[in-house]
Image 1 (cartoon, one colour):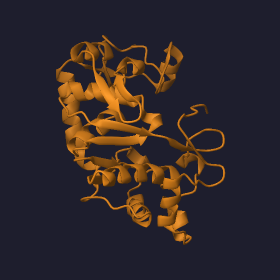
Image 2 (cartoon, helix red, strand yellow):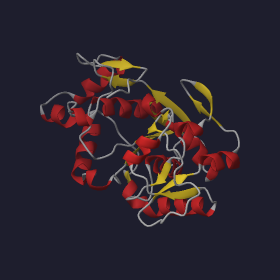
Image 3 (cartoon, helix red, strand yellow):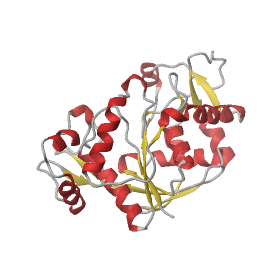
Image 4 (cartoon, one colour):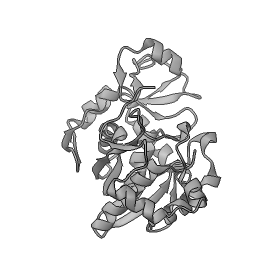
Length: 281
């Protein structure tokens, strides 16, 4: 059975880009007679705003999207994340790092999908783990997993290349899991068989496939869809004040009609559907 999910973070209102992503996940499950689930990724520290969650539910209902079961909250899974981190530490695959972002940017020699690739400054050093982030020793992890592949419905079979990211952070200084670890564990726990998300996260799947192998997790299929972008090619973003669904809903706009327009590719002026992503500032 196909099971998909929409997993917004309550650090700002939903906008048209979120609506499009939710519709893709919802409709893909509905097409197969499967299940569409909702997960709230609410572990982003002080940026998470619990008062936005009821707004999210109202927005999705307004769009005509129905999900199966109660929403799942990442904040209820902290022990699961911590246990996975301990397991990876016990395997000798994590090491503590106290480098700042500025130090990494100054020392990095290459750029990866997430920005400057960590140069391995703390790898092999005796670093006080108190208050440190924990990084994956990528070379050791790849040696342990061996060659891996994953399947995207749009792009076909992909050979996994997690080395593109370098030694990624899996346990943050302030949280028991990074996005990479939490999302991978959540999709397994929720029985997600088809991970739908934007093309901006395509490369992240290389890391997620590696984590699935290391932690003996089931492997879904992925579907990385096109993105709604502004005139300059950048995807819609909360931080650039993209019009919110809540504002449209309160203004009396027809949510189901909006969803139908998004499905048909009828987009507001200045917004287009792009299969590529401009990542500049």
